Image (cartoon, rainbow, N blue to C red; front, side, top):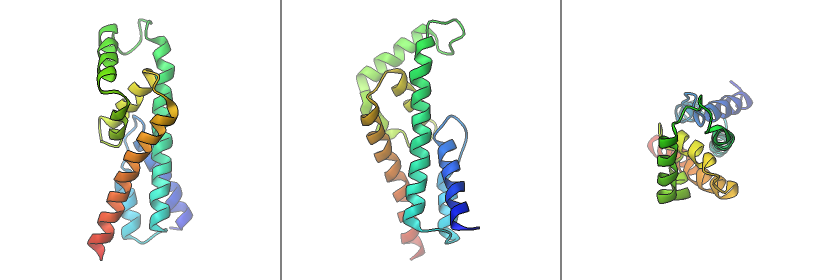
Length: 146
């Protein structure tokens, strides 16, 4: 596999991993590191870019979907939505640092979008958390392989 194909594969995996679709970008990153395909720094940055972009899609979906919360078909009841508003008011935008956590991270970005979080600050917090995760994976492998 060429480095370009590896970067493309990793980007797609990282993107889908950050949406409500299943994905395993950490495993893909680790596989390319083990196989020594591509530059490790570039692999981390590609994974970060795809994952951050996927999170922004989820954020945008939350922002867009919130406009329809008064519709009968909306998947969240008014009580659940009010609970989410209270939760977000209490814990706030800092929870976006946890957007990298499996299972809860994707809904956090959707909720932040629905609660009209400030986009640039959301990008910063989401990016910091996700960058830390990928550096941990790549750094852990590098230390283990040394």
